[in-house]
View 1: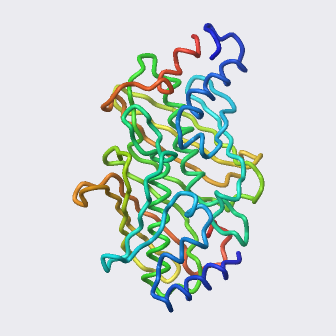
View 2: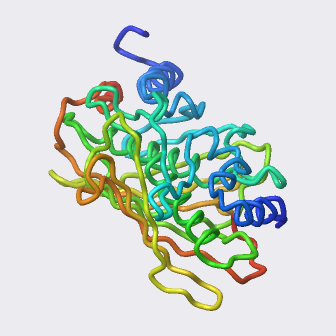
View 3: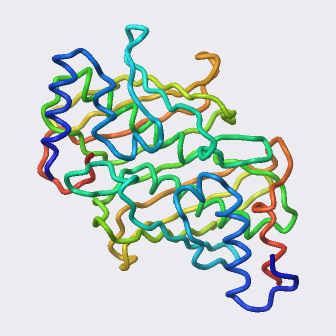
Length: 154
Length: 163
């Protein structure tokens, strides 16, 4: 699967030290207002609040599917930015734990590599809102980083 | 809104569409359509749109929209079994991405709630593009029943299903 556009964008972003350029190459990330940032020095992924993220209008709470989606994007941005990836990682699976209901505010996520293998990487990601010690969701995901398998990649 | 009792499957699907997709802002934004609902079962469709693409060079959908639909579809399957409706929330959700979805073709989700207790509901779902034996993704979701807040109208669909 071709991913040269994103890798080109990644190399530009590395040269300019501007990680936000990564999200611009991904239509879904733009539509969801999901973008990586390094303003604190640490690579974080932010999902900016907008009203179409809501899944439960009574509470109100952000749709669980969007939390899974942004944790997946956080894991991908982490692999692209923090490892010297020259191919776009292919996601195998993701398991999301929902820990608290997420209110109508920005969601921020951080990711880390739990295990880096030659072909397979295990990534853990955690999302929070106001208080990092009170995560709203966490996820662990597997990505193929070195394989010709036909699996989804960005 | 249709008046009760709902007698035809079409009337039920129209009501569920209204409750589950149209009144849940994110499902509406994704354009999710309810295809069928029965006790313990639910089916939905997500149409391809360029805004939902992960890689513009291939046109393949991002994982996120499929994850969101599978979560919703499993949730609807749970709601069909709640004879005493109560608020519930996703506890965990595992998605296996079996293969990329073909660009410009809709994705269909089919979910089953196979076990429900007082506190927890267990679900399975597949997403495919016409052949259920050739899925693009598989999901396993568990739901916590009796969570905080008020029960929503979409969590009360079992009342519309009759016996």
